[in-house]
Length: 58
Picture 1 (cartoon, one colour):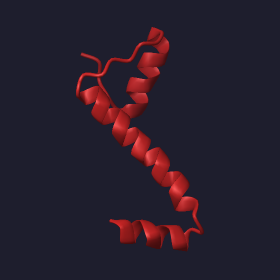
Picture 2 (cartoon, rainbow, N blue to C red; picture 1 turned 30 degrees about the vertical axis):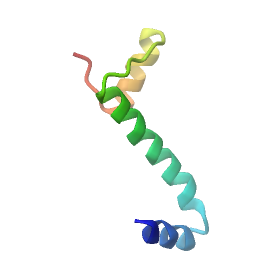
Picture 3 (cartoon, rainbow, N blue to C red; picture 1 turned 90 degrees about the horizontal axis):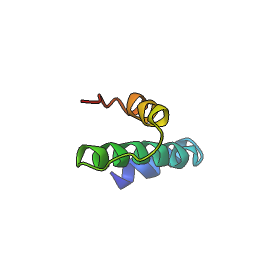
């Protein structure tokens, strides 16, 4: 996995690191929400977050 990150970073002149950070953040937040972490914000923002993460409100 590290070799792929190095390869992509080399090919994209480091731009891959920026993209990988956003991908990691999305995966981390999705896992946290699946484990039961609750969003505490106004309803419109929570709905936007669920929509962008592909989570259906039950």
